[in-house]
Amino acid sequence: MYTLGELVESFQLYAVCEPCQRVVWVDVARIIRDEGAGYEIQRLRHRLFCSCCQTRTRAIRIVYVGTNAKASGFRYRRTASPLPDKD
Ligand SMILES: [Zn+2]
Image (tube, rainbow, N blue to C red):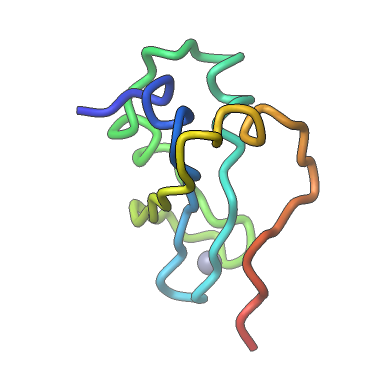
């Protein structure tokens, strides 16, 4: 099982809301600051909640971004939404 500390090295994490097709970038670096690098992705999955349609979702998308992800992943991206909104 991956931990967030392992994931942030080379992956980006997105939460996917199936009912409203919303895809939101998850600030893994911030969660690591709050919960520690040993926090498991599986646990994060249970905390996902869509603020748009008020639905709990456990769907996540993990995107490989290469070994330089650590540098970019720890940048503050408060309003970042790298994927275009659908519709
Ligand atoms: Zn939703």
